[in-house]
Length: 84
Image 1 (cartoon, rainbow, N blue to C red):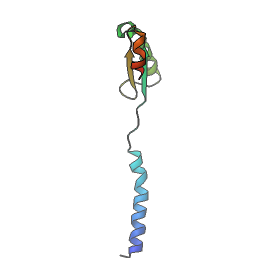
Image 2: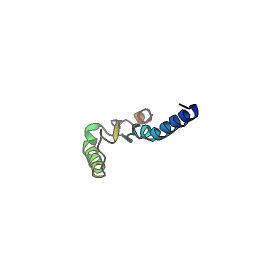
Image 3: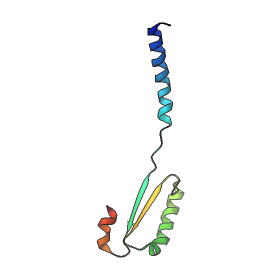
Image 4: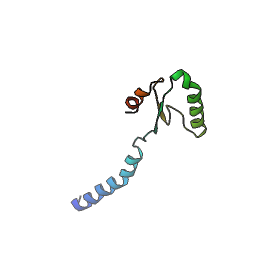
């Protein structure tokens, strides 16, 4: 087989398979950080309402979105560390 023909054949194969490799890359999952001064128990009703609103928009925590909660539990001095 002619080496020039082999080169073009390999180039064509590589170029035609490249898009399928790209399509298989993992999709990034959106992440929401929720920082509150309250404790988890005081925030639970609002947290559920927040998750329900997201579900209505098609987002389900743990499936196509991740929500990370941080609670300062009434201590303002904890907020900077929790935000970091």
